[in-house]
Length: 82
Image (tube, rainbow, N blue to C red; front, side, top):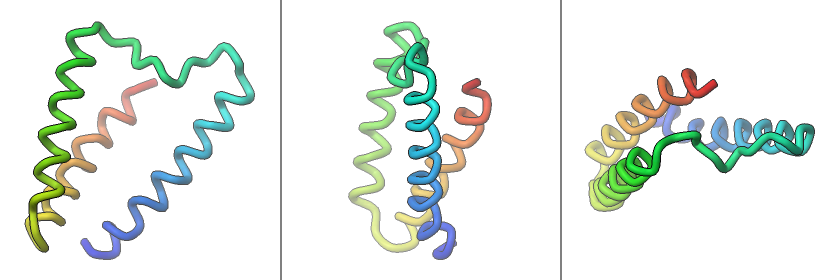
């Protein structure tokens, strides 16, 4: 899990650069819009704040578990985003 937690930011950075390139190639592509109803956007913001607090206050193994869980939860969402 330690190697994964170190590799995750690197992969995220690569994905960010790739999306940024897509945005530059297609001016009509709005990468800021989630295409969600306002209530869903607000719910996700609140959920993110709760997870952020948990990640910032957890120590050692619990931190790794919380980080892994949040990343695992994000993966299916990212894959079905298209």
